[in-house]
Length: 155
Image (cartoon, rainbow, N blue to C red):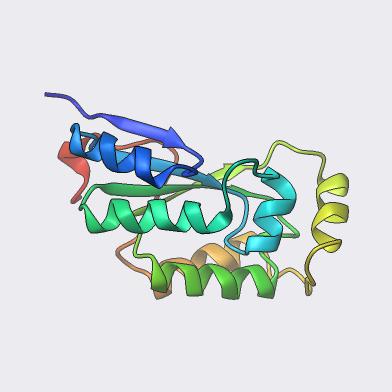
């Protein structure tokens, strides 16, 4: 009984496989962006690559466990056309079950400077419009803030 959830950076798909085999029910993987350059600029991964994160997501989906992305967002970056387009592409390729919208607790001016150094960004469309767009395009995607118990995975 109960729900076994793992909050992770998704860096070790081989370890994730063993956890799923042992009974893991769900994962939540933290990401600030679904664009590799932006992800790497923020997380500065050591000992893993962005491809490992995607592999972990795909493995969890293939093994039929609940997959949420802890989407660390920053208005002015997350709602740019480039990030919106990348998020759409990501959600089409990786049919996750939930996005947990989280505030990125980082100095926004410093963050914009870092992100501007690795990728181009257009004029933000606004977070409300981004959320409306995602809800319209992906009506079965859950939005929330907490990991649901397994009894609510299908709701």
